[in-house]
Each structure stands twice: as structure tokens, then as C-alpha cells.
Amino acid sequence: MSPRRNRPRGAVKPGGAEPAVRHGLERSESWQGDAWAVRHISGAAAVKHYRCPGCEQEIPPGVPHVVAWPQHGDGDDRRHWHKGCWNARDRRGARHGRF
Image: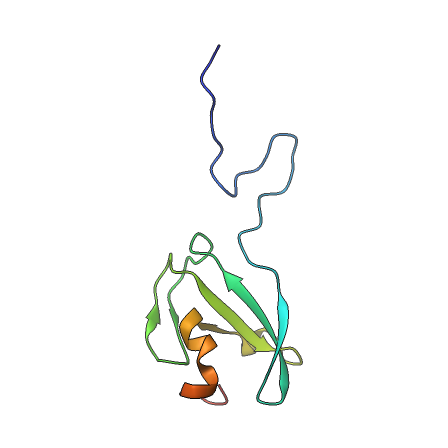
């Protein structure tokens, strides 16, 4: 009998199935009188550097975080936040533009 092989997360399953979802489900939150789309990004899915509008610090690759944008906006309105900064956005305020 051969040893069992574990597939890495996100790998395509035999039979052509889609890769496992690494992004959280999108949900709606209210903030500043607008409806916002919010999605949690896993560390495995975070592959680029981002600048958090809450603290102006870098979010390096591999760090789980939140991406949020106004539901009536487009993709250019998306911002990547540290989870703690997003949760404290009412107390801290954002330092960039309308965020």
C-alpha cells in the first residue's frame, strides 16, 4: 500500500473540480452612511503589498486582512485594511482621501 498524499490547500481536486476558495465570503456592512462590501482575505491569498488607509502602514504578503469598498463604487474604490484598523475605523478614521 502506498503512503497517503495530502494536496496543498487551493490545489485542484481530481476530476477537474475548482480550487478551494481562499477569499472569505463577501458581506455588506454600513459605514459613513453607505453600504460597503467587505471581504476577509486569507494569508495564503495575500500575495501583494498594500498600504492600510487606517494606519498608513504596509500590509505585507502573507498577512490576513480585509478588503472593503463602497457597494455603489467600482474596483478602483477597493482598499485593503488590517483587520484591527477596519474594526476600529470609527474610532481612528482613515487618513487617505474619502477613506
